[in-house]
Image 1 (cartoon, rainbow, N blue to C red):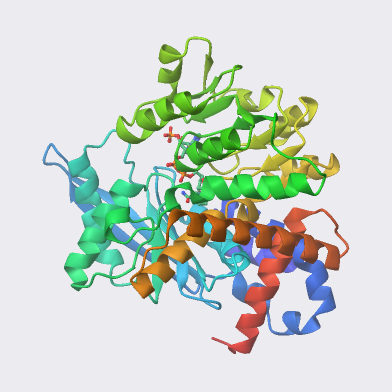
Image 2: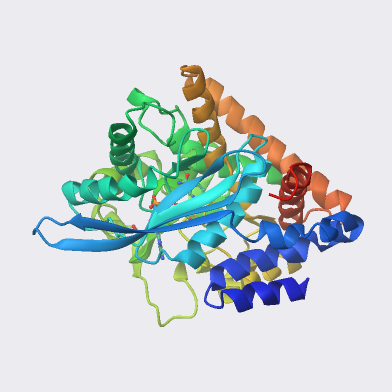
Amino acid sequence: MSDILETIVARDPNEKEFHQAVQEVLETVQPVLDRNPEYRRSAVIERITEPERVILFRVPWVDDQGQVQVNRGFRIQMNSAIGPYKGGLRFHPSVNLSILKFLAFEQVFKNALTTLAMGGGKGGSDFDPKGKSDNEVMQFCQSFMSELCRHIGPDTDIPAGDIGVGAREIGYLFGMYKKLTNEFTGVLTGKSLGWGGSLIRPEATGYGCVYFASEMLATKNDNLEGKTCLVSGSGNVAQYTVEKIIELGGKVVTLSDSSGCIYDEEGIDKDKLSFVMRLKNLRRGRISEYIDKYSEAVYTEADSTLDYNPLWSYKADCAFPSATQNEINGKDAQNLVNNGVQLVAEGANMPSTPEAIDIYLDNKLLYAPGKAANAGGVAVSGLEMAQNSMRLNWPREEVDNRLKIIMKSIHQSCIDAATDYGQQGNYVAGANIAGFVKVVNAMLDQGLV
Ligand code: NDP
């Protein structure tokens, strides 16, 4: 297997995030390949690690000063074996081919786990919405969609939000798609409720992650009641993770953004969370402003010279990384273990480095990788697609119940696959194996395409 990884690295030596994601999957699916020699004969690894299509395009737009700006747009159509490409768009200055390929690759397995018919894709741009006016964001989104619209469609590729792409951006993107194609169709998910969105979609990733954590705790006859939790980020996933933890009786003591983190020993209650939601979603402010309002909390500025993140050094029972990739390194993971954390559920995609994951597994933590724990977002996107196709809207309870059932089923698939391959309790192996087998069997059924 190392020869395949070497080829992938040699072909695209600068794609370190993609290599990291591939390596993790290859290590865990080795026993599946050993048991199924036809997989090796059919070169499924070589095929599944190569995107079906990569689209890279120029995005020119005019800022409020009348200056022309040029960004780069991407869409990775990774795998369509079990359904149309599905995955979010990320607008962040760090976006590049490596990050989007890793996200698209993870998405393939995640979508397979949801039980819904969705292939994997991901896209975005190095455009930074932070500090831009609404008009600039709209100009950018319209230019971005004027190219992307040729490559997507409700039965081809259905993008959604991710970092930097929320309800505002989805609105501008959808409006431009509709104008260009003259079709009102479910081509994007995460739409607003009044024009095709689904109830519970904004909440789905955070709620789903907490449902998954509850399932893991239930295997130990435990639950979130009274548990102290660390949450990173303060965007969509973090906000609804906090909301659900509070509802289930847990106490959240941290939040962050790229500038720093806050620690509130008394706990972030419902009122404090409403403040954060207004601060982040309406005023687009910084998390540092939390301590202006709640002086009992402490703010620590991000410091890139440190080799650890202070957010992961507080005493707690559970950790919910919900910001970005590789936000927990080996030292952070050791800090979590030393401070009593027994469960890590990843709301973000690949927030833990390989060293961190080894530490979780060595210390027998309940550890849920993002592709299982944060699959609730794309699952409810799938339910949004179903409602769009039927021209119906399901009530909140119905979508929430379906989300719970899906998270329970993903949890069970991870347990079953891990047990089947002698790795009881290892959710990394379980998620990778269950997703891999489903996608690879579909690829083999469909021939060499
Ligand atoms: P948002 O843009 O709503 O929020 C992202 C949060 O993470 C912000 O607080 C942001 O801070 C912080 N952040 C982003 N980049 C960095 C960085 N490099 N260093 C430190 N902090 C950073 O995004 P989401 O909440 O939607 O996404 C968060 C994570 O969850 C991502 O990994 C995403 O891929 C994953 N995810 C999201 C899903 C969804 O449905 N939205 C579904 C599944 C996974 P700042 O404002 O300073 O940038």
